[in-house]
Amino acid sequence: MSKPSHPHKPRITEENYLYYYYDIPFQGSTSAGKPLRKLKDITCPYRGIKIIPGTALRGFEKNLAKCRSSEEIVALLSQYYENLLPTEKSMYAIFKDFSMLNPDDNIQNCLQMLYTNCLMKLKLEEFYVLDEVDLMSRKLSPSTALKLRHKTTRCRQIILDNKLQDSFKRKTFLHSLEEIIPNENEREIFNDIKNKALFLPTSGSSKNAFVVKYSRREQEEAARRLFIGSTGSIEHVTPESLGGINTIGNFLLTSADGNRYRENMPLTEYIKRHPKIPFYMQTYIDDVIRNIHEGGLQGNETYPYKIKKKLMDESNGRIMISLGRYKYTEEEAAEAVKEYESRWNVYKQMK
Image 1 (cartoon, rainbow, N blue to C red):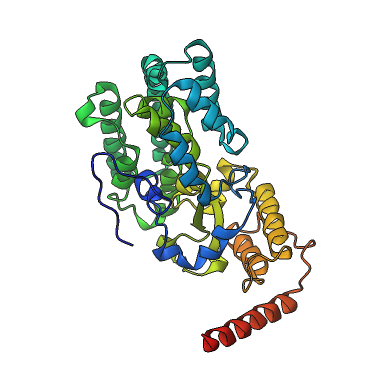
Image 2 (cartoon, one colour):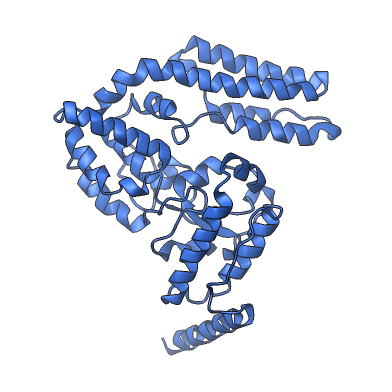
């Protein structure tokens, strides 16, 4: 699928919304994970929330287009409150309080009222991470450390200047780090530094970043953002950039925000950021097993065994999943797959 054109106000559909909000491909390199999208009532293995199925997007969009006031926006989002991620829940609470006092107003005005204070707090959040990056640079050689300091100093200048035409872009800074080629003996510490830079705030991890970003967007877009972060997305356990392949045994069904915020971060580092991931992974697998027992994921009955091994390897043993609830042994699961493939081949020949 080619990336859709971007007219002034594009129509967001189930097929293209990830392009506009997360730059995560809907198909292509994740096509083998498509069967996971059909799973129901699945816990996000990264965030622990119940994932909103992609099929709910069209109905949400239709209802959102009818909303005019903050009160109507809050009423619509309230149906999905339990699915929202922590930052989104915080923003929902703010919108709810605002709508109680200003039911006929627009939530964009709410964001604009908060903008100045949140911008100052966001700058401090960004400085905290840049300070830690600079502190870690002391372990590098002088030449590499100076190259890194040049980039963090430039970022500080941009943050302090606050010029709209030259605003601080987290992604730009992360990409700029790839321009630095460390010495062979300092590659490990430099990778640690790049992982630390991933902690720079985003609209998914920081309430302040959310307010600053969406205060200049339309009410509809801000409300949509709260919803979309919890919708389903196919995630590579081993990132493509690190050799991850397009096979269901390398895929998880996660929330779109959980997928996006990991980026190419090693799973071991992501667990440090979110220590409950091993627990969430077990809940995720239990949900997958329940779906299989109810007749879902046919032809992929070996998936729990494949993903168990993949997660253990990728996490260096930090994630040890129990398949005690699974009715299939590994051999029985393989037989179930063969039986499904045989029936499918017969069906294709009959058509």
